[in-house]
Length: 81
Image 1 (cartoon, rainbow, N blue to C red):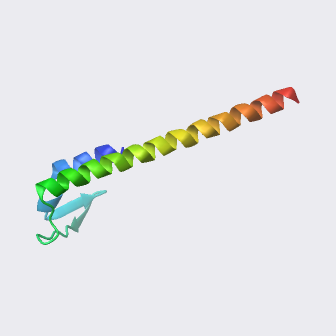
Image 2 (image 1 turned 45 degrees about the vertical axis):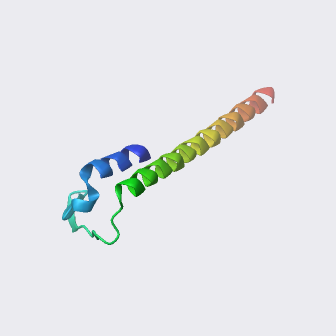
Image 3 (image 1 turned 90 degrees about the vertical axis):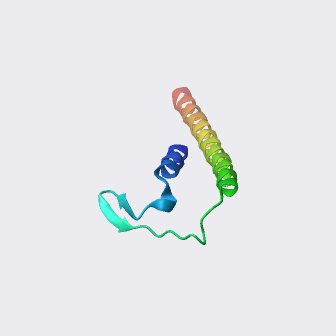
């Protein structure tokens, strides 16, 4: 989900928007040539965000596995009385 949002934002060309619609509400986009990224920096930032998203997903999977383990232990304890 995070990765797809980033791809959609890139495809939308954030730097060239005059208006952005969020939930149907039009808001003025704030772009700055001074803060614009070069292609190289944009590629590097995309790679960094990709790694960050992968780390978040990995952590979510770890937490889910730990919670599943706790549920199994609880069910076993209840079954054993």
